[in-house]
Image 1 (cartoon, rainbow, N blue to C red):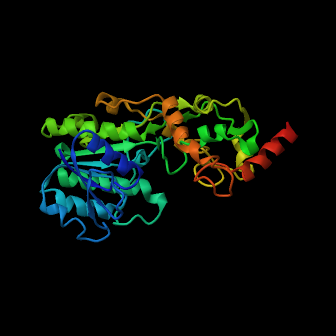
Image 2 (image 1 turned 90 degrees about the horizontal axis):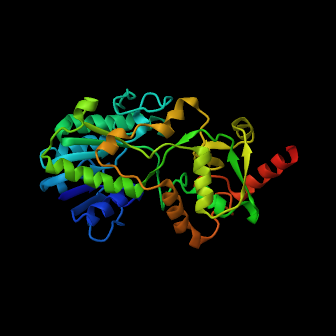
Length: 351
């Protein structure tokens, strides 16, 4: 296949480029940066420029792969490429759903209102921006020629957010070289991670199957919106996830548990960012994020490697650099040593 990838230099986009190349396809990346995988062609362009796709719009493509967030980028891409591309696969997000409070949310669930403007004004509008992108693809390419993939939390080696690499790394390097790791006392909280390598490999297979079917609308009857798939990992309780992370690190560190209320009171943030504990959620409206339905994607060929392998591979990539927790902002997510140690001391004093 002749594939046009709008992106290809960042984590997910680069994984897609590598998977396409590995499957023997021709790949052209449109990106502002230059770090595309060997074997991919590069067209340097900034999609904020309204004419950014003029060069590639002069060629024909079997498929377009797009990982954009800004609705204006997708609207212009659909406008410029609908007449020269066979399929358009858009990588969206499970954050589009109007409610994530329930377990088992599937592709037919209601979504938030689409963003009307071309540029997302804030991260709070991320879901609405992705809905607007999805809508542009479906309107421009039609249900038979469009595919929408809604990933959940993406993890694996090189995760730039640190959300899926924090726990195996923290068990490998407990604070101060000790034998204790602070964890949320929420063992039953559902978590879900899809390995970026599994996501990319499946997307390529999905494109291949769609191309071979010549645009057959497989899956459209299930959603009424074209082929839409939740690309999420299987649900694993947080307690089990932490045990797998400790095993991946071959660690005997003790898990020191703290209640959500205590952690919030002491300035620890849920989910991600500086001074956080990744995967931990306190908002019941988001509890279903760790247990969305992936049945439709499974039926379409999604294959998931064991979570234990994802965690071990992630740690293997980190190990040569030593502990990532020795500085105030030493890691993109989680608690650095200087934040975690006082918390562990206080817990020990009040035990």
